[in-house]
Image (cartoon, rainbow, N blue to C red):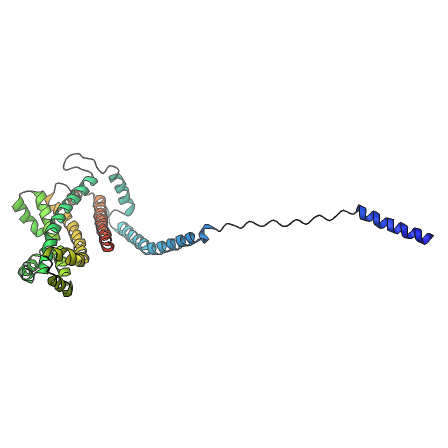
Length: 308
């Protein structure tokens, strides 16, 4: 009797414990973790941008170092020179800021802003260089195409090409009686030789087989020029044009110093008479920077023709 009751009590205790114990929580599936966005610099575009930026920095370091060394040497020369001495970079920069604050003022023909003087010089260079290209390109093609004409003009070119550009200025003044056409004449006669010589050299280097095929096909001289000569000679022609524009821009400053009136050359000489050395240094940088822009523009044009 007691054994049975003991078992009953144990069974009752077990049942009671099962009723009071909390049921285990139902297991919920773990939520899927959202993928982290890839940083932009690790994407294909970001890596391409980083590579391009690195190449740009590597290409920019040598010019920056050279310019910094140039400014340092300039400052040392300015400090070591006796009074009044050469103006330093800081003083020249301050003068340039004041100069370009109003570059297009006009107080008469002999007192104009630096902007007008640059435009006047560019206009003369454009006119003289345009005339040189208009005459020199066809003449170069004819000299390279016809051996008799080449032999006829070779001694004339050899005689006149080494003449200093400024030696032609008195001839221009004597013939034209005015300074403006005389300056244009000097630019023309100085810049025509690179165009003629490079164009003629390009024509003589055209493969003879091309001309023989044109002769067999009985092509007209115009078709020979447009279909064979011009595409083959274009690289030589663009080289001659680049050299020519450099000579033209180099000559105009010296010519304007002698003729006066307006332009960068006249402005430089006028500032020298006023002993304004800062403005002379500024003019040197303007001449160099403008010539660089002209050359880079022609390089861009040559590449456009090359890929056309």
